Image (cartoon, rainbow over all chains, first blue to last red; front, side, top):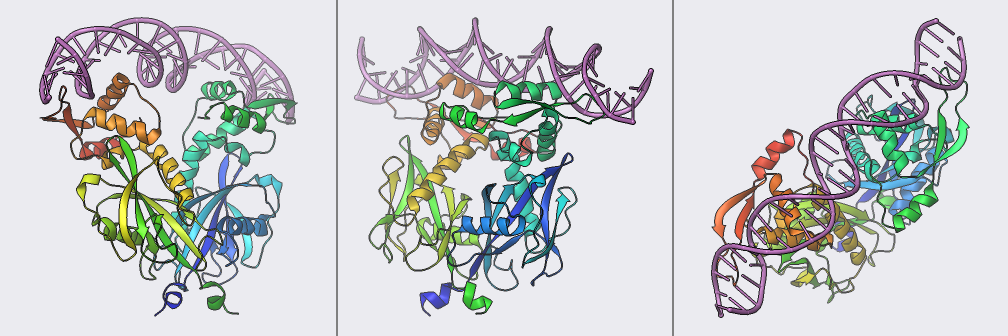
Length: 229
Length: 229
DNA sequence: GCAAAAGTGTTAGTCATACACCCATGT
DNA sequence: ACATGGGTGTATGACTAACACTTTTGC
């Protein structure tokens, strides 16, 4: 048996955990599978990697086909490679997660996805393949990352209130945080700019809206600053 | 073109960054390739994954073939999948790192490795494929991990002095640390047990030797303790 | 007795935590 | 006027960082 017949008989896929945040709730975008295997079940979006595309490219293609979005925070999580994880043959999958602003787009059903819906992170159904395991890895990775890099903002609209960002942290980390201490720490980093705008039409004192100063963050990084929340 | 002919024409490999520590120096085990491609160059040990083995199994097999060791700390780093990274076809590689005690074994040259040698982390030659990039990822991952989990001990003999473990941290993290503060913090965690033994035949005051109490660590973890250095 | 690394405490400053009331708006 | 969430400061304890001299051994 030569090398080609012995080894070059496998495939790899990418699967994406797409996180969004809405109404104080962390959400994940699941698709309703329109193709076998597991046609007709909720699953993570993903696809086989084409022979002529890089892994990261492939993950971005999947995201773009589904959401139309392309400049999005995305990172590799882990690769899952149990022998029998895929019913059609030896397929390992490289898992990615990405962070999107829910309000930025409408979902485009595609060839492999008949439908797609946001699912609250606490109400995830049983998923096919090893997708529940992948999702657990994604949550853990997001928890670690969000404390050491200012990626939470990727999930919020351009302008947001301090309470919104706090709720985001609380729901990602699954802990409660003290309002005064949270604000003190976050504002002390000097990475938020007061937009001068406030909420309106809310039945309480309107909150000031801030935005994240990406340029300032990058320049602070160069000076040795390290984000931590 | 059906699915099999279109996609099931690729392979995947595992590559291992095997770290060791000796004489105050972090080292990496490189092999001298005995097979094409890149026969006759230093490279990371690795092999194609067999169709009937899990990814992690495969990484452990590579390590065992080379060193004979099997109960070793090992963790996945990242998966590298540029289209043209391998000259023989579409091969993505899943990179792992492991931490071994250098004194525990002698290297076994194997089918794919004509020879193997420890290379100081600061003197790594140009490596084939994307192996230099993999090594950089491994270093970064190790730096992050060693601060949040007591894995440094995996690189030291059963019994070690406080100065040895400090040097290990210094060379992994590429920083200098204060002797008194380091000891205070480490001993305060109450994870080291004084073996009652000291160094001998050293031309200075002999150091006490300690060992790491794995059981105690596991029980503290359950109570919510989190390691941090 | 000299060289070499081991071992050991205190102080000052910074950071994390805990905590409660008044304010602005819509209904 | 009431309900709702927005906005703000202080005090205490914990942790971090900086720093220098004595001890034990081999040669």
